[in-house]
Length: 399
Ligand SMILES: [Zn+2]
Image 1 (cartoon, protein in one colour):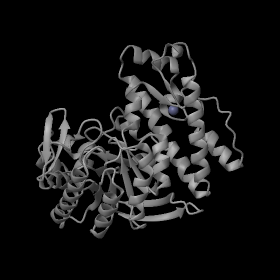
Image 2 (cartoon, rainbow, N blue to C red; image 1 turned 45 degrees about the horizontal axis):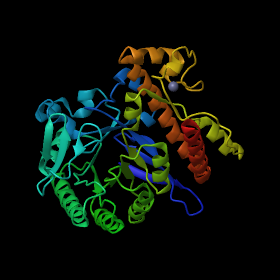
Image 3 (tube, protein in one colour; image 1 turned 135 degrees about the vertical axis):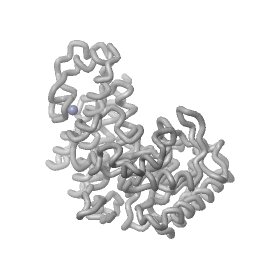
Image 4 (spheres, rainbow, N blue to C red; image 1 turned 90 degrees about the horizontal axis):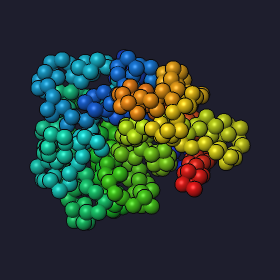
């Protein structure tokens, strides 16, 4: 794996564009900031392999996989004999990034975690995963990147428990690195520290001393105060060497992504698209309009559009328009809002398939726009304008 920062936003900003090269034969170049698509047992929840290929490339090549999803699956030796997850899933060119736990199926359970390993609440009960178990999973699955095991705690735990979480996470990182010593794969060190700026700094500084390929910033989206998040993120990124990639977990709302990018984050792992899709929502925020205004240097706030629509609402029953007129995804090219409303009403899974295709397409486009704004030195304006439009639309919807 190689990573290079190619552009940093001017004016003292930390937002940056980078190029991530992974794989053999020169590797596949992924431009950052980028999104890792969330998966369940290795595949996006509703998008099949053939439709996966129709998503924007190379942006859609990054997949987050959760090794704990496979603990009740085929024997690890079988996965290994098949050649690892890439071959088992039939996705040889995709970049699989492994991290324990997700925010849907395998929730970290800080109360049940102990000095031996991290505990996760899963559909099949609570599972304790030790560093040795975890690295065996990684070794058999052969992901392109993996994050070390972490003791993630919610924001409200005591300072003492928070400190224990940092100590354990560092100890488990050392154990994971030692267990992976012969494979030479790319390990990301997890940074925790809850809502304590001091513990965040300490953890980031210690992890950056280790032999890691990048950094996985965990422990966000677990009840922290939104006002504190900015200073916590910046406290972490200020302690990290600029030449290695930084990934943050569980920050997925557009405003959260923009906040992370502003703090110098390169990669995002979230279940936002899945949550939207399950709720029957389609993203429709006007990325193109913001882009055009940035390029033309004209900014206005007369949008009048909303950020997402709920296709379950009866108002879409007779709506013959596309989700987004300018979108060239499979869903928008072939189907109407009325049809999606019908599919949701009759509980047909095709609704989620079509919504996930569109939402993924739309959100990857959002990331592309962020990169373009950084490249032309207008990220702060892009963020400001985007948030202003979102707030105006949310206020209008409430009124
Ligand atoms: Zn679309």
